[in-house]
Length: 168
Image (cartoon, rainbow, N blue to C red; front, top):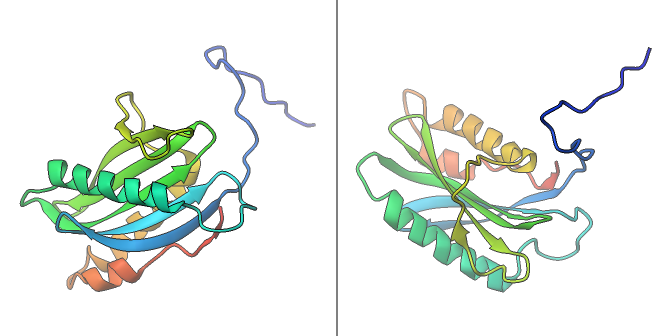
């Protein structure tokens, strides 16, 4: 017997079926004393060319520098982290994550309108990440455990441990 998914009374609408998106490591930047692995996601998995335009990449880099300078310049930060730039359906999302105090990851989320993808502003509402962004976050969590939460932490190995490019 086939089970039919019904809408929960609180849900305004049922979620759309999952479609893979293109994800790739773009670069590793040194910004505000932090080495940051930069990942990109694009809503169109068939899109040819780079995930980010030069304009968006420059705006992202400036935003990452500002977030880290304002939020991660203290003795608790390990100077390592990652960011995710997601060219999505509704906006360009930017998640800036950095590691502190052993195994804690901190995050600031920003967004920019699709029509003005270089104008990032902080997201004020409650949000963590979407299902595509969580693919990268899960990889980064596992890389952190493998390379940093050991008897001999190895930042170089952490920075070299990248999620392979593909459709996720």
